[in-house]
Amino acid sequence: MEDKKIQRINELARQSRERELTPEEKAEQKALREEYIAAFRSNLKAQLDATVVVRPDGSRTPLKQRKTELPS
Image (cartoon, rainbow, N blue to C red):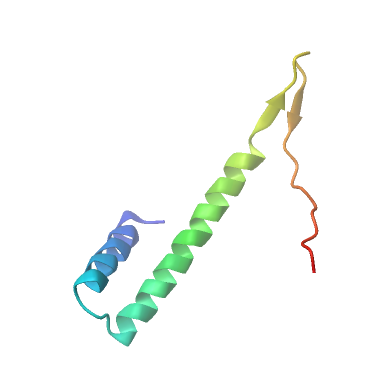
């Protein structure tokens, strides 16, 4: 995510503490936050995909995504 967009997120957060945001500003803030969260998740997933477990015998095992079911 571009630094310019992160600065805009921070600017909108400061403005929201000082005054009520307009509906357009709220929509922009929501869209920017969603984009930021998507980028964060993507970067975290890439980092975890590159992580390996090194066993005492020296073997390396990549991390796997768990297939867990959420309770109904």
